[in-house]
Image 1 (tube, rainbow, N blue to C red):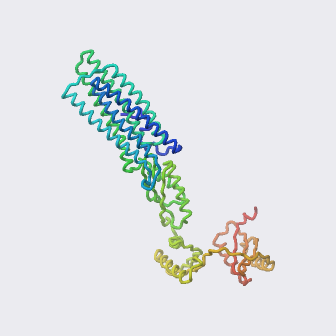
Image 2 (spheres, rainbow, N blue to C red):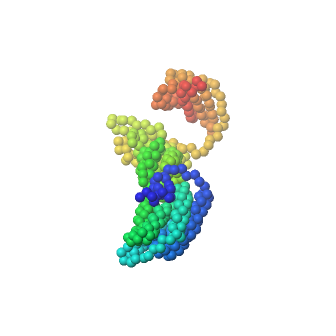
Image 3 (cartoon, rainbow, N blue to C red):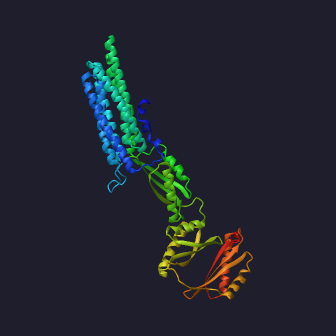
Length: 493
């Protein structure tokens, strides 16, 4: 039956339909509007319930009395809603880390139970009047006036409640709107039943006397139908069921994040009008901590594209890349221990793989401490990469202090000697910005070398290494040589 959803507007739709709609409102405005509409609902429920009780007793109409009982429970529900929206908007605290939003779901659950109790009483009384005892009904003008007034009030408050419930995704206000939208139709049915009773009395049609309890049964049927819909959504929220289809949307959105290997787990729960998402994602084990944080921010943004304002927790899990080569596997083991391995080279010596690598360690360590760490690392690499038969690690100190340079000098003779050595390498198109520094009495030299844009990086590195060796041979006083390679297009600007 579709009539039950007409009065409450969009608030009575499935929650999944509201997922993804942008939410832009201030917390203070939300609290004010929700409390105001809930308070007005209580006042309206009091007035309508009193009128129905008075007229129902005066006329003896089961339909009106059933409506009075229905409205009485609506009053209780409205009071529960009023207090629940006041509590649900409180911020999270030490005892309620996810906030107090669940009170709205619990309130809606109570309202559903009260509605079903009303239905049991209506069905029982209707059967009694249909088969076991006759009750005279007096369908007078005040009865019809009260019923039509009730319909007008219910229409007004169901629209207002539905609007605010949809705006702030409030399940408690949605339950109230649902109640009052059913009241419109059930009250109309009761009025129609009374009209049939009146016509039966005027035209002497005895069987129309049963129109009143039959109308009451129809009211009970409408209430059961609508309550079952609300109960299903309320129970889903209390049991942390994920909104239908939302998990698939989140997985699809998150899968597009650059650098992600897999989406391992997605969990979603709702408390009031707030969603909480918990995701586990797989990242390459060689990814740095800073990069993993960037990916986590991108994943959070993707989730909020589906669930705006959701509270998102992202857990990163290191995973081997889909196509790891042996170099990646070696670096992956080192990364597990937060070691910086570089200049990894692997040689195939008669079918046996030999690894050479450079490892930076804290300069404050003693040689024994550093060697023990390297020994453990090499054992783990051989265990994870059994193809490797031997490893040789060059231990370097990882600088932790800023060195003070004494001076920058211009040594024309040394510069000429170095440029003549560079001239022996035809791949080097140009050498410039040659600087000589003295740091703690040691001589440091640096320069920029221009290469062809399409020269392979491996060849560039080989030339740099050869130049460093030749520079130190030509000038033994050099302690350190640093060569910065540049593509030729950069030097044309």
